[in-house]
Length: 329
Image 1: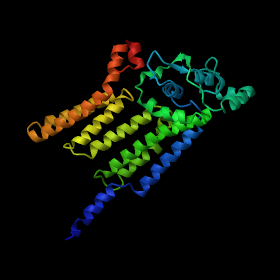
Image 2: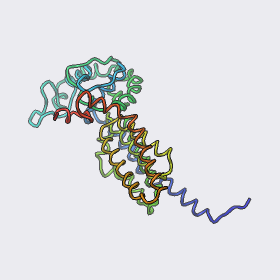
Image 3: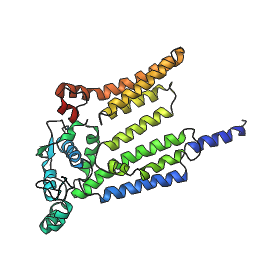
């Protein structure tokens, strides 16, 4: 067998662009640790709309039913927490508290409330979902994220509410962090000048809303993971790879079952591929490949996620099923 050493530099370059540099690994580790630290010190239900997302997970975990807009309510135990524990400012004027709620200064001045919190909310969070009086407006979202988080909810019911919230946040943040790593690795694998791809690892540290957005209970973390998969599959694959195109379609379908902004994203992706097909109209081979890729993306996406939006249209007269579109209608 003859060995060709002429290809060794080329192979080394291929290996180099497929792995992150030490600087990128250090910054990615920093993103992970800062995120975990953030979600650990954030008080329960302090994140954006966390308590309604928590209620949706609790409903799926305890009742096996999906949250549906207009038919789902906030968990009664969550409502009890909001009236006995500290919550963020709810108004623009002093004392900044909504009726029946306590801001942090008011809570810590109330020794009875502090003692009750330590006793009652230090117990195991093993209650059963009970609909409260407030409507769960986040039930406008498709249910995939809540279904995925439900087993974690059941597995942590022996823990206190504070610890359970931490576990759900950590699971959500790890989904987003995995998406961050996939996107970073796909970017590093592209043919870019040295150090350019590494810069992508730094952006969460200079745009700290990354931690507020993903270091909480919420479906945006799953969205980031799915977007990263779509990006990674698309940027590194040839248009003739039918399995990859189908995988992209499945990711879009799962995205449609997570949040409605995958509708314009899928439309933009389809338009991009349609333009590629138009540019290749004089080359039958390339035209066929682009059209095939487009169809292999659209079909599984529509089959997987289309049913939810058909239900939204029939039930609410809106394809997106969003609270704003329903209110406007």
